[in-house]
Image (cartoon, rainbow, N blue to C red; front, side, top):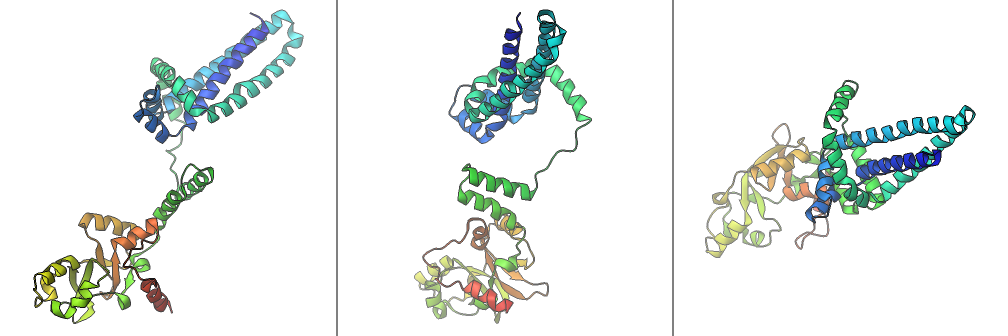
Length: 334
């Protein structure tokens, strides 16, 4: 076999495995799942590879190294026989250069740019090869496991950086990036930071009759309102505006507010916002009363307040142009 043919075969084999390796890494698993749902040819095998990619990659790397090592030996032998040992160093240097350019750099670039197409075409053969060479791969895993470090974890900062990169590259939308950023800020915020302060909190006197609160009930911008006894530092529960409206419709205007009392969730002003979200889900509630360590009522917090930390300001037709909560916060600070 001539030196030229050996070099061409080695370059082809090295390029093939290098391109496949990068293609399998480059295609996102979410994209593969979408292709599998569309029942694209090869998508099922590709999804199986992506779910446990370490073994297929090990097989590809083994094949690539076999091609390069065996190819180098064959080239060396062919050069010695055909041209003599004097040419061995020159041909070897040229061979290494060609492998780097045409066996690594160019095919990896092609693999990244055409990841989906290459992945779908090669997935099934790679999966079959992985199953055939499972004993060898298993042996490699056992050997490398002793030298591998603990499982790498991704930090909060890394995820934030990745979201910025994804936004810059157009792989995620602006609103998706903002939500990712906001998820992490939820653990940095406490109930006190986003609550409606008591000074602007809407609450009903539990001893009042519905007839006395008729206008407030009809014009209430909220679906749930805290109820107090004597003053709004003594919250005893919460009432549902819907129930009060039904009572008014039935002309039950002499009923007292406390007759519609529901249990209110009480939370510390130091509780984290992400915990509040889980608490609202667990209790199937939309409102909580915020207290300090002395039991003093500081304000009220709603599920909407928490969700706004994720998706931004939620404005409906009942919201006022001026944010009273923000004004009250400024007063608290000053």
